[in-house]
Length: 315
Ligand code: UDP
Ligand code: MG
Image (cartoon, rainbow, N blue to C red):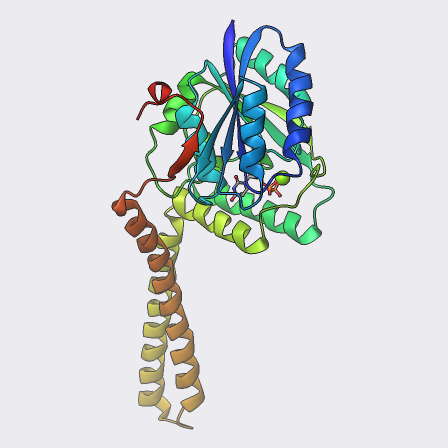
């Protein structure tokens, strides 16, 4: 019998967790060929999520939980789950039931039939604001152009993986974890499942526009050095233009002499080039700030409490 862990990152999900547990358990009942473990990762929730997890664990021995010492973000929560999962297959899904559990049996069947990863891809974006969709589509275009990984548009974190894929992901020690990029970077044979987005069953989204744009920037910087080259090109282009313009002015002065002293052009040149320099410095700064965090080698998450036995834990 194959063993399967379902990792569920939870941040303030008290409203939806009981419903989630009921619905997923109902689906799992139909998959009699596998032994399941729930692995809830409480990502520093401020509500009663942890109490709910404790009582679920008391009721059902399949329920394991890890509670982090504060909110480390979904990326860290997923990593914590993967580190502690010991099973043949490992799956990740959101607590809010947006990732329909009905897909689980088909995903497991895909792994059995030889695929290493079964992942969900969202095909429609209804129920999402137009601006958010446009930004999201733009982001996929940019990151696929600039980086050497190929991220499928609408790829979600909802997926089932074989053990070896999880080992590969854990072997990437980076601090700035952009899972969509990491999942794609490790490769392996993937089967995509088209998935229609559901409304969140209860509670509210934890991703503000600000958080999402940080996430996008992390993705681009984590998986591409193109912006660094971009600033180099812009710098070169700007200096060539400046040089040509100077040459033109000298020649023009020698031939026809000066007309009106050119304050406006000087001022605008200062602004343009000053701006370009600041842009380039900013790009470099973004990379350096990430290098700074990487060299500190801080842990990606800290565990406060768990019901997993210590001898099951490997470092
Ligand atoms: N989540 C988390 N830590 C965070 C933010 C979110 O563990 O800092 C979890 C959250 O509990 C949910 C999943 O990540 O299970 C997806 O979050 P959400 O549904 O808020 O995102 P959306 O579906 O709106 O993109
Ligand atoms: Mg959601």
